Amino acid sequence: MASEKMNQHFEMLGASLSKLYETGTYSDLIITCGNDTYQVHKAIVCPRSSFFTAACSGKFKEGQEGKINLPDDDPDAVREMIHYLYHLDLAGHEFIPADGNFLEEELSTTEHDDALKQFPQSQGHRFVGNRRVKGMVPKLAAHIGPSSNLCLFAKVYALGEKYGILGLKAIALGKFEILAKGHLQTEDFRLAVQEVYTSTIDHDRGLWDVVVCTVEENIGLLNDEAFEAVVKYSDLGHDLLMKITSMRRAG
Image 1 (cartoon, helix red, strand yellow):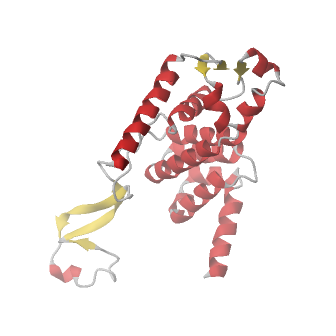
Image 2 (image 1 turned 120 degrees about the horizontal axis):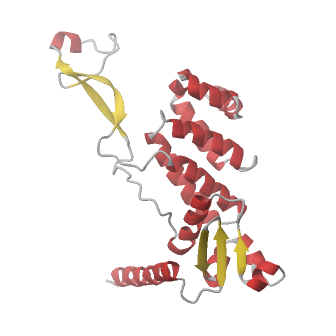
């Protein structure tokens, strides 16, 4: 009972913050990026961002005037950042299967007799019932969001580092990792890998490690000519080599 009441209080608090986000009521700080303007609240954005804390400390013009312009950032990524500061989540709604697995077995339409099933491994086959497993495909029910969000999440992660918002980095990292599993074969994944290796600083390996582990677990991606070009013109090839070498030494 006490837990339910506590949850209700948190829901009410969340609703209040969401209303402030939507209306801008009592705003004492304006953030602009491109054509977008956000009427925000110092008491909400500053405690979660070392950048906004410094900018609003009174020593800088931005804090004194109550206006901060972010001309060099991606407007969509900034929109997600502002949304996070009020909701502790991004604006996208990605579906995550209950078992955490985005793939399922694709079965052949032909039913095989028991003779072939007796030695499936020697034939290179695996069966479910009388049907051969052709491979793994994305679950039909697993709508995990558009692949274009991969680049967006990479940019949001970079903003989390730039503006000192650790929680934003963590949530963007998690969403990127989940989304990547369902869109490995897309052009957007290749573009996202390029974004990761160009928008994040060298000593921040959060997204880098996710990309390296994802590719290593799906090494067949290296047979794709388009993906091979991504490896060639980034540090991904070096990182993959280092990871594989490390795994062999450990094994």
